[in-house]
Amino acid sequence: MKPPLFWYKNRSLPGLILSPLGALYAAATARRVRQKPSHTATIPVICIGNINAGGTGKTPTAIALAQRLTDMGQTPHIVSRGYGGSIVGPIRVDPSTHAAGDVGDEPLMLSSFAPTWVSKDRATGVKTAEAAGASVILMDDGFQNPSVHKDLQIVVVDAIKGFGNGLTMPAGPLREPVNAGLARADAVLAIGPESARQAFTPDLPDHCVRLNGQLDALATGMPWGNLPVLAFAGIGHPEKFFATLKSLGANVVRSEPLSDHQPFTDALLKRLEAEASAQGLNLVTTEKDAVRLPDHFRAKVLVLPVRLSLNDWAPLDEKMAALGITQK
Image 1: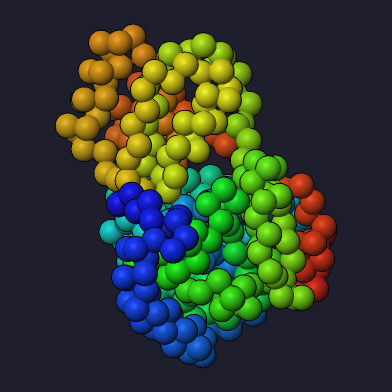
Image 2: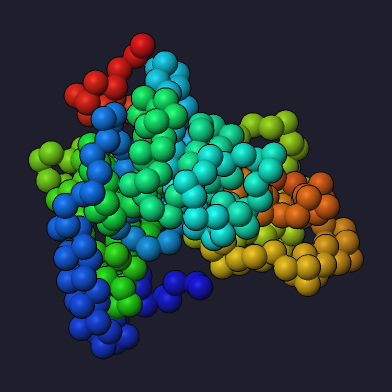
């Protein structure tokens, strides 16, 4: 479902009317996060989460951190609930046998970068990853889930969207009030263009460090300049993907924004293919969407992968070093 526009407007009438429901949602979240964790791992657990509902860049962050830890000689494992997948788990994601409908699109994509486990019960997933030889666990989401003790919590924020109108759902885009979430966070990672990052100035607690990053298109040798495309994306904010394509010089004749994790039905794919063929356009989608495409259709679609780059890893490296996560 597309987020309503009033989520990003201050003092809107819908936000005002829905604010009592938002207060109830915030109270329920506060009760949940106060619960004691049912499991404390013997190895460090890093949670990559958010305060906003929807896409903020958690998956690129998990990829970047998994690669960083691997380069340090660590053995990171990723644990996810597997949103959109049917398997309860715990199970290690195997791209050769699992489809997005089994384990979810994000775990399927993440499994290319580190051993990835899907478990609807996060505590069980963490225990399984520990037993499998992980030296550090990356929790994909789960910032508001109390079942596992987290040693380091990173809140990822879209610098352009920020925290919206500052209200909790359904009055605004937040899962909990900003001050409550930041009080538990060890780091806030703002992702976006430099101008947006400079404008995003939340009041952080003393213990919480600020990180800045941007998503850059991965160089694949594809000549995007003036390439006529029909771009489609079912991610949190599809407009960011379309803007990236345009920045590379692609001629985005038409863009098709889809809901986050929207299934690719035969009817939808046939319509996209027919429209692209009729106008002489190339179909293009995101890396995350590509893993959800059926095998017979994947070869018909170009993929634009992006990677997160941090301006400065030092503040996060210091946090990890304090947990014993260092170069091996």
